[in-house]
Length: 375
Image (cartoon, rainbow, N blue to C red):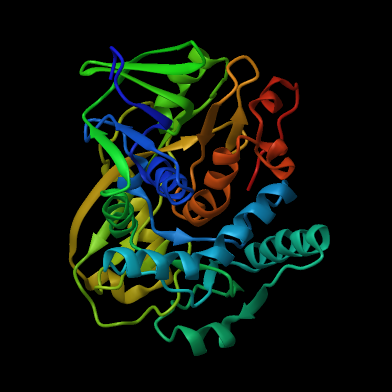
């Protein structure tokens, strides 16, 4: 606090999946961490996450992102085990591989071309194209209009809400967690970052902005930029069903408790988290085409949430040039990247030097005339 109060090593702003994973990783590096969490009035992307730990197709136009995503997927098994041992919370992580269902031969060809391009650029990329007969051996309930799928053995899924709960449980005794503290001002003086909220001012040697969409306003205060926009996604959930989907797909996945999540829409509607009949209709039509028996099951709830998106879909990782020690971490894949955030990015921030492989994710790329869209 102000007036000669304790000084932390790091203040992390943002208590969602990104901020919590970083606070967890930093605390394991022996850092004294203060985590400022605006609270449930924030636009938490964690609430709307579909729960995929996904590799296939990621980074089709950015090898750096493909490698970063794969690195996190490889860390996930040990990460989930570590959280279970520390908190007794099973986050529901499973790694059976994942499927992207194709509804036409043209989709199959396009999907194969995309994944083959990744294999060519990375020289090692595991995927398999499954025809309809091969797919039906895995998923007998698949619809007649599904012609095949791509399969990647590195894909998996997890409960995003249990993950967030486990991370917060894990940091209870390690981190000074401060909920309900919206940041009003940030100032650097006397070699420290002074962060003011309505409850006072807190100081630290380093500062990490992990506030999702809130980073857009916070970043300029420390010489950074966060050109992020909200993209709404709507999700529907069914009643509990007998197991029928042992592998997650891009739009349909069965959770560890038997419910089925259906998604996902991509809507540029500003900061509107409401649900719409039109999006629900589109989501259910696609799901029923993929698994016809879903037309007879009960839908129990639906909700909308906001993704944190950049123009090219890639994360932003950067240290401020004008305010050394201030970092920005922004991404829309908070679940997939949670493991690498906690186990690689957090130690790098603790050392005070981001690795060269993250140079591709500086916000300077948005100043160029031609921004390539990422997969």
